[in-house]
Image (cartoon, rainbow, N blue to C red; front, top):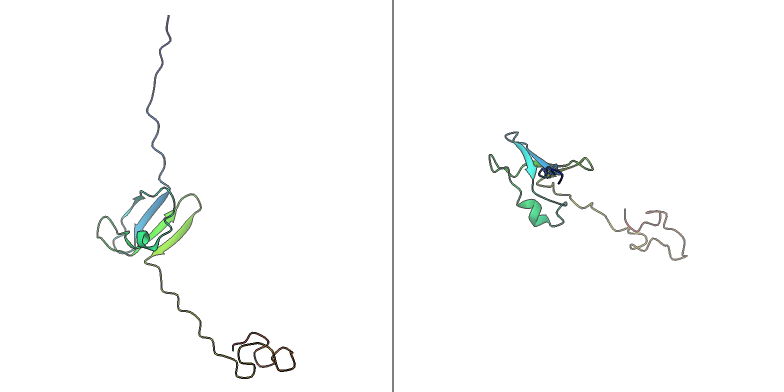
Length: 105
């Protein structure tokens, strides 16, 4: 006599990445298996409802959040030290008192 074996389909895996549109509030899963490394992939993400690029991506495993498009980070303005000439040292090989050895102010 053979045993009756019931085979159920495997459950769908829970999506790891979700996004929420900041314009219309639409929310849905993203088809990524891992966080994309390229900025071009991130720039191509749009809302499926209103096609807005202003979305917030959520990683459910690490609870990380990324706002897209990413804000532009302005590099800090550094001025050369006029006393040491960006070396950080005086002519006596001591730490520059004007910039404290950093070379910039």
